[in-house]
Structure formats: structure tokens, C-alpha cells
Image (cartoon, rainbow, N blue to C red; front, side, top):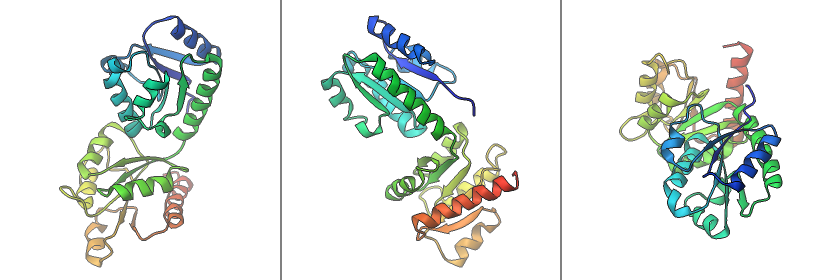
Length: 255
């Protein structure tokens, strides 16, 4: 994977912004500068996954804050923010501090900030090198539990319904899907059948991860050829071992 040294700097023009840009460039980073506008950000093609938001007046960029929250949740974007104490406290009501890659108080020390951003870039490069797994389950507690189990070794994305999975996969590629069996509206077997019917998604490996252990349920999906049929009674280590084994076998066979 090519190294991505790009930063999306979201800020108005100004002397401090020029100083921030100059220091980041000194660290061999490429700056894409856009004003705080969701429309302008969305219109950018091939956006980097590391953002730096400079907050001047929080009330004027509330839509940008919500947009960045969505990017953290949906894309695992690494969002850094620069602001004063009051603005940051209000920001945390929308984006918890522990979900931010970096927080810098104004007036910012641009040299220290640039060093921290370089570290964020390195962390992001390591994360993006990991295999991508999509977890599909209507149980929020299960989603968060499995994410916490897998996130050290894999990039983990989560959706809480079958149709949300289809929408997600229309925009993003993954290396494996962990799919619940029983979900409202669109069940796991229906999701897998839909994936198999489309050329863009038919080759994505799918493992069921479910509480359904009866023979009839298992037999019902065998024709769809899931990679594995796993039960939610598995321990953390057992689940990781199954996933590790799957990727190791694919690598060994150059599949």
C-alpha cells in the first residue's frame, strides 16, 4: 500500500493557518486546504483519511462537526481538532474526546502539533494495512463486543441491519463479513443471497456469526456457501483463531 502523507485541513484563511500549513509541509506532509463547509469537503475527490479541523467559531460549523463524527464512525477517519477550551468542551458533546486522533489547544504550538500529526499518519498507515472486516448484527452490544475483540488486529466496520450492509458494500470494499442470522426485515441468509447475486459482491467471503445452532438453520444456508458457520458462544480467542486461520489459508492458496 502506498504511503498517504496527505492531510485535509479544514479551516478559514489566516496567519495561524499559514503557520500550521508551513510546519506540516516541513514534515513532508501534503496539505489539502478547504474551508469549513460540508459541501466543499464532500466535493473533494479521493479525500485523505486524516483530518485537521481548526475551530474559530463553533456555532458556525456545527454541521461540519456532525459530518466529521459520521466520518469517524463510518470510515474510521483520524480526526484532529484545534480549538479553545470552551469550544472543545462543547465539541465533546458530539464527538467524544476518546474518538479523536488528536486534540490541540489554541494558541497551538505548531511544532508540537506537527510531530503529533506525523504520528497519527504512521498509526493510520498501520491501520489501513490491516484486513477489513464488516460486522452485520442488529444487536448493538454484540457489535461493540466483537469490534473490541477484533480491532487490534483488523480494521472493523459495523452496521446494524442487512440493508445497511448492502448500502455500505456499495461504497466500500471489505475482506470478510461476519453476518448475523436472525435480523428484522432482512435476515442474514437473505443478505448473503443478495450479495451472491451481484457480481460486485459475490466473491466477498462471509462467515455467519449467530446464536442459531439448529440443524435446519445450518442446512438452510449451505447452498450459499458461507466460509464458516460460527456460534456466538465462541470465546474471543476462538473467534480470532477462526478468522486468522481463514486469512492464512487464503494467503497460502493465493486466493
